[in-house]
Amino acid sequence: MKVSTAIWDSFVRGYHWLQVLCIGGLWYTGTEGLMDWHFAIAYFLLTLLLTRIIWGFIGSDTAKFLLFVRSPRAVLQYFQSMRKKQNDDVHLGHNPAGGYMVLGFFILLATQLITGLFANDDIISEGPLA
Image (cartoon, rainbow, N blue to C red; front, top):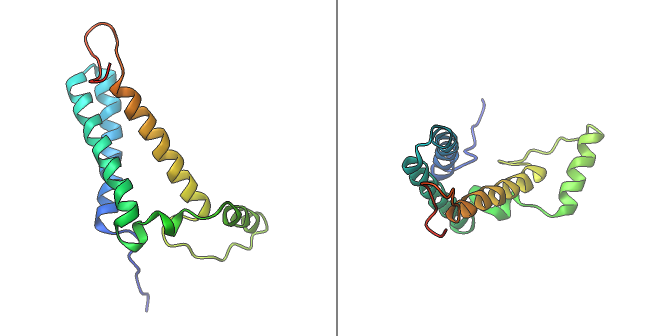
């Protein structure tokens, strides 16, 4: 009999899908010049990202950064085990290398969103902090 284990709570699952929809929406509204919608989606995504960061400290066990952001040594050991094809470890959620990928993605996303607050095209659109 197979036992299923919930890896992510409902907040994290919802966050993942809302983030996908927001990024797609930002791309579409940006290319179509729908800047009012673009700004609204960006504000929502920024709020969503900040909420996820907070949830990474106070949320459920599998949502906490402490579970999936491992030491650099653990990441190197993970890569070595992959190279030797001895990777029998089971990771709930992200593997050690994936944890750093998540942090990198958060940093890139936050940078894009924050710089957008200062954006100015000198024609029609400008961010609130331009």
